[in-house]
Length: 400
Ligand code: CTP
Image (cartoon, rainbow, N blue to C red; front, side):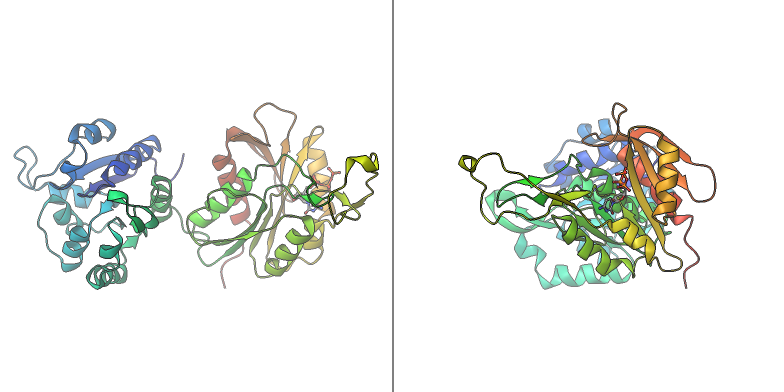
């Protein structure tokens, strides 16, 4: 179960065109096991129906401070919440909240809580850039309110610019970050993801089937727990939310250079990438033409990046490798762990259905230097990522 399970979340929706996206945020929160109490402002009702949100949330929409059945609803909602999320937040809501004005149920609830608050602004670019909005947000930030910044993109009326509400996915990830354990705060986690591509000539490569999804899920999990993440990647997937810098690479040599320049400063290194073991000894400068006959391609081994990291591993660093096996899973993984001087190795039997490359799911055995292996049966790659990060975090020493 994720961090949202069982959490009481007040979802405030204000009057902006992006209000329809709050419906999707609500659905995702409920799917993740949260109890969602929705509040809509009068303005929000111009954009979405109360019935829609009431049907998807855990209880009916409330919008009045003067509810006869439940007196003082703002204190009930504010005091009982684990998190208050405002999606979208208009300039008016941000201004009223910063000024401490309780003009309706949502602003009253925001003032009547000690729970963390996550505000997701959405408005036209001119409003977003207005000094008043800027100052109000700075005030909220200073008071510890979390802000999910809007993105640039298409706005209402066909305009394009900054001010579009962040995606429901990144809003939910931000909620997870706020509510989740921050056990990796102050730590740096280096993750590699995807399969390397080794050039044969100007247009052809030797590649493999790795999608990069498992590596991205590990990066997302580490970031959600407060880590600073460096993600060395050969694929283009949506960037995980949080403090994640992506270094795009293509070949094993590029991956090695990127990894080696960040490894020594990292507390945890996870080599989830499928690095080619062999590459053409020499890439042809142009395109190899077929009228020259069938080419003979001489291969040479690539550097073993992981073994290199193991041989210079600084004290206290947790080094995690992956092993894709088709037989003798645990013994093979164990010998790889010792050979490459690892602390953990995540072994998967890629011959099983639903496991490894190009699946949303994975089943792994996490082999440790000390202690029994941890078995994660077929699950979503995010669940596997959590198990890997849990096992690595458990090996970290106290922060200095
Ligand atoms: N790896 C690496 N550099 C390489 C090859 C692999 O860093 N040139 C890393 C992978 O990222 C993975 C781990 O090593 O974390 C396992 O790789 P694998 O190819 O399974 O291990 P090998 O030791 O090459 O063993 P074998 O091919 O015999 O299974």
